[in-house]
Amino acid sequence: MRKKWRLAIVAVAALATMAGTAVAREPMVGDARIPYSAVRTVTLDGKTYSGKVFHEPGKERLDQSISGIELNFILDLEASAGFIVVPSLNSYVPFHPPALLAELNRSRLKGLAVGEERIAGMRATKYRIDYTASDGVHGDGFIWLGDDNILLRIDGRVERKTHKPMTIRMELSDIRPGPQNPALFNPPAGMKPIPEEALQTLLSLTMKLPKGLKLPGLK
Image (cartoon, rainbow, N blue to C red; front, side, top):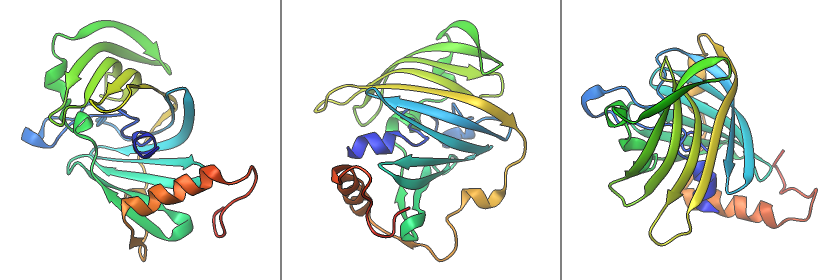
């Protein structure tokens, strides 16, 4: 459960929704050169999540509902750090993207292109990915990048030595280029940090509740 909702970021995640690192200031895979908003649909092991993504070069936000709880995933791509904002609890959880996301950069894609397609009205180059990160997590599959470094689609799986492989598919739709509100990329003032374990427990509890029953205070 813990790994699935983390992969539902951006991130991330989706997931392997984007990749890169601040090392040598090389543009991250997925750190688009233009601002935009879009709908991001992520499928993890057959379970689909859909949310709204907002992007400015170096920053990204995904508004996502998981187990009936509204979450805002905010990423600082240059610092390889982020927050999971829980509006209903007036709190946020600091986090760092997985190494698999933080290590795949543009230079690693050289020579890996296998074709071109059109996705959401944009031209996309398809790349074959077969990479093991420094923490041992292995990503295998394909990614599609637009001309402006927009990560348009992912189709593959992630493997960790002591866990079952996880299949991941991500795709953007309704892409709308244009400036985004800078306030989207910071936790609202007055929110308090909570540990990751607290959010994990909350999500686990809501999954066990009878259908239609929500925890007090949650929308």
